[in-house]
Structure formats: C-alpha cells, structure tokens
Length: 295
Length: 214
Image (cartoon, rainbow over all chains, first blue to last red; front, side, top):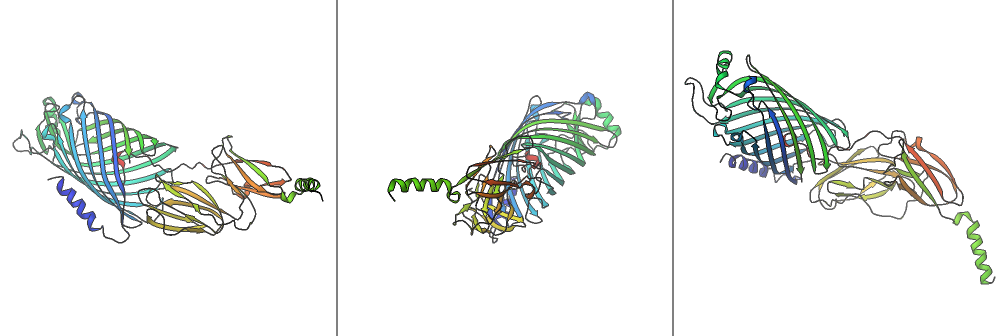
C-alpha cells in the first residue's frame, strides 16, 4: 500500500498532462548501479571505542519515463529498487522501494540555460532488524547550470520526513520511535570534465535536524548527561541502544568518474561527514566504488 | 586528317591544354603536437555556381548526430532524420543560421536551408551532449579531414587559389589559416598546422544514481 499510493499518484499526475498539445513521451529511463563501499563509524557513534565499520554491497535499479511537456519543461516518473548487503552487520541488510516524480524547467532552450527541478520521492525501507524499518518522504528543489561543456554547478535543498516504527520503550518518559526523523539538507555540487572520459565531482552538504546514533551501554550515560535525547530504544545491530538527537553536520565529498562508453561509467567516491549535537561530535567516512549503466 | 594523325593531335592537345586537365589537391592537417586533426574543413576561397542539388543528411543515431561535421554550399538544404526510437529536438542559435525542429521522431517536417556562410553549431535540447556542426561555404571544392588528418580536393584546374581551413576547435580565425597555391598541371599537396582550443565533449555517461538529474 505504501508504494501503491505514490505510484498511483505518479501515474495520475502524469496522465493528466498527457493530453497537452505538443507534449510527448520522450524516452524510457532504465538505470542500474552496483557498488561496493566501506563506511567507517557506520553506527555514527560519538565515542571512539564504539565506532564500527563495515563493507556493503549495494544494487539499485531505476525504471521510468521522461515526459516532455514543451521545449522547456520535462516531467519524470520512476520507481527505484534497492538492495543492500553488509559483510558483518547482516541485521542492517535492507531492501527499499521508492517512487519518484519530478518536474524540470529550463529557463530557455540551450545547453547552458539554467534549470529548476522540483522532486518528490517516497521510499519504503525494510531492514533485517525490523526496528530500523522506515518510510521516507523527500521533497527537493534544485537549481543548476552548465557553464560550458566541461563545467556545471548545481544547488539542492531537500526536506526529509522519515517515519519509523515504534519499538521497545527502554526509558518510560521518552519516545521509542528513534527513526521518526525530520531533517533538511542543503548541498552544492560541481562537476568538471578534466579530460575526455574523466569527470571530477565535488560537493558540500549541510544537514540539520534529527539523526540517529548507536552506542553501547558503557557510553549511554555520557550521552544522557550531555545531550537532549529525543527518542531511545534497544539496538540489536551494534548492541546497546540507539537514540535520536538533534544536530548538524557538514559533509564533503569528491568523486572521480571514468566513462567506459556512452552508456556506462565507473565512479570512485569518498565522503567525510562531521556532525555535532549539543556537545558531542560525530565523524564518519564513506569510500565507494560503483559501476553505473544507463539504457 | 587521317585517324592516326588525328589521335596523336588529340593526345598532344589534351596534354598541353591546361584548361582540360583535372588536378587533385592533397591535404594534411596536424595540430601543434604533430597529431592528425579530424573534422577539419578545408576549402577553396571562391564563389562557384551552386552544384546540382543533392540531399544532404545529418542523422541522429544512438543519441548522436552523424556526421559530426558537414560542409554544404550556401543555399543547400539539409534534412535531419531521427533514426533513434526516441524523440529529439534539434536547434541552433548560431548567427549564420538559427532554427528549431520541435520534438519529433522519424523524419523532420521540413529540411533546413543554410543560406549564410559560416559555422552553424547544432544541438539537441533533450540530450545535452548531442552536438554537431554545419559549415557553409560558397565553393563546391571542399573536403573534411579524416581520422588521419587527410583529405583530397579534386577537380581543380590550373590557376592560383587561396585555401582556407575551419575546425570546431580552431583557436585562430579562418582568415589566419589562409594559404596560397598555384596549380600548374600537376597534383598538389598542402599541409596545415592548427592551434586548437581545449574543448571537451559534454558528459554523456551515467552519473551515480544519487546525483542523477532527470
């Protein structure tokens, strides 16, 4: 039901504009990605002795359609399927399905004309450790521009509302819905083609709002004394408990891409994330190698 | 005159009469690093009567324009068939020729007439990386260099000519490439060394799914 409703909405939204004059389906979207990643401080702990790392294999498929309303306006509607498998922390293995619709408006015809894109995505994630299950509603706005054939910049703002499942209440006066989270992210991206078939991408993201962190029983008292915990429950993945705080983070990423051919590319991606709640600091890193295919 | 003597007379006439002798001009185009330059347009700077009408085509296959560079005489028509199973929208904002072919599949509604000299850069509004060029000249004597940087302009007659070069990445003006040749009864060779701008093709390969902008 959680996927059916957004899918139907997508279909209805698109079909209502299907009869516009001069509007046409342009082409199918068929994308696939396979990646292998190492995440340090996977549990986003504030304590060095609690940090855990793991390798993850991820596969994603995207299927949808472009719909060109006129020479400047394009709709897309797509579904996304994702599966993640961890090497050690099997309980974090997950499958997610998502529906995504968006409208993109170019302020004219031409390669270097700026565009504005509005998107809405509804994603349902089922994790092997059921207490981590969640539904996510994401809305975003992006403004971007090519400055030349080699260089482009985009700015993106997204708001995320995540709905988790209630689990065991371990502190009576506190919520047990750790994955009920609201947060926003503002990002800036820059892409630069350094040589034929080689692309460098840099990005910065500022995040503000709810986040989840896990720690063992040894450290929970330190959290209790220094932070305003909004929700807490027991954690069967890392042991101890998992709790929700309000905080901010800065993420810096870079990636190097190689175009294998017109339809596929390899990407090497590295991100460092530095977060802060009221007093505690969090840091994690993510290194990923992926292969992408587009029909 | 007896047939044998007539034949000798005709042979000697053909050999010594320059106006009936057709000559080739072989071209070689290299860059400053002595690498061959493909897609250079080399042409004689002259105004010639428009050649017999030929249909010139710029196709769209696998989301690319084929060929990348086309040369036509001023006043020629070009058709833009779309042999992909998806739609394209072709446009140009070049001062020499501005046009737009709205979204279509199969054959475009009409050919486009190129009635001004110079370079015309074309692109697809749907697929950002698709780009191609049409270069419009007055002469019917032109060639596009191949992957070895070579080409041949055929059917020249004796005389003095100015030869020009254009390339999508040419750093200098076309006039700065001018070379003079004198054609006198034998095939000629001409070399060009061109300075090119660093101009890379727009990214077409897929980005990571998290960074896709549809």
